[in-house]
Image 1 (tube, helix red, strand yellow):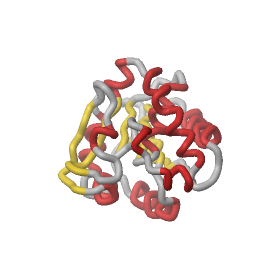
Image 2 (cartoon, rainbow, N blue to C red; image 1 turned 30 degrees about the vertical axis):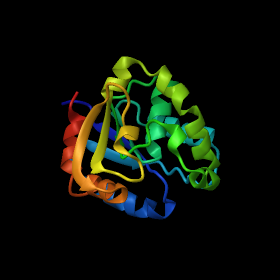
Image 3 (cartoon, helix red, strand yellow; image 1 turned 60 degrees about the vertical axis):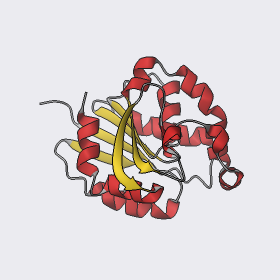
Image 4 (cartoon, rainbow, N blue to C red; image 1 turned 90 degrees about the vertical axis):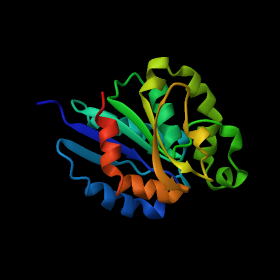
Length: 191
């Protein structure tokens, strides 16, 4: 029997939805899979502290096949984690993830979150540190159209793509976590 999968879920903005995210993820009753939400609390705390929280969750899951899933702003944290650590991830995935083009972020997001501002300031450096193999192993799950994080901003060169038949940012994330969760699980189980 293969080692269990352990999903570390990194949410985007909207701390008030963390309880709902946690509840939905706790109902991912898939065989041989555990799921852990690492709260980002984007409106408070420093970027480095958030990265440390993710790395601690990874350390705690040693011995399992580790999957990082970053939602929206959490997508950038997946990129940073992949670029800055020597952790052998089973898979990295983002849901409507802000994975590239930091120059397109509106000032209001930076005003709300200095940690996200720092994440965006460092994003291009982290992208450059990724190997071609790491980029190819990243799965970008995105809707047909997303006005918040346009599809081109969810992509890294050579990454895999899964398009959801959905329109909009929050709806696509909600569908990925609920109705389309079997599609997400199928994409992450592919080696």
